[in-house]
Image (tube, rainbow, N blue to C red; front, side):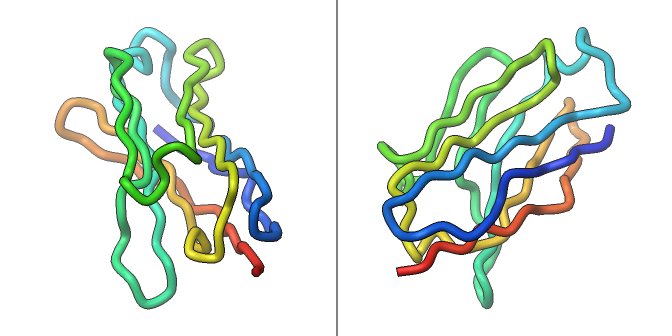
Length: 117
């Protein structure tokens, strides 16, 4: 499986961005059983979970982004999205796409999000 993340960029505080992560080298029937997530890593900090979407449809969000971020997936396109609204400078980080298939995990290359005040 390969994960290609995109959509990062520079935005002012209060703005929005939509990140996309497309899975390739996999087939739909298998992707449907995968759990997907977005993590982020700010400079000098540990990588943290931002949002997750399980194959059963459950979602989970970090407290810091609840009410501002949503995660969704288009299974037919094997793509997961992270809609980020009301962005704050504290959201500045490299955002990584993550896929878990049974006991195996995969990471995308990361897309950088910078929020200016």
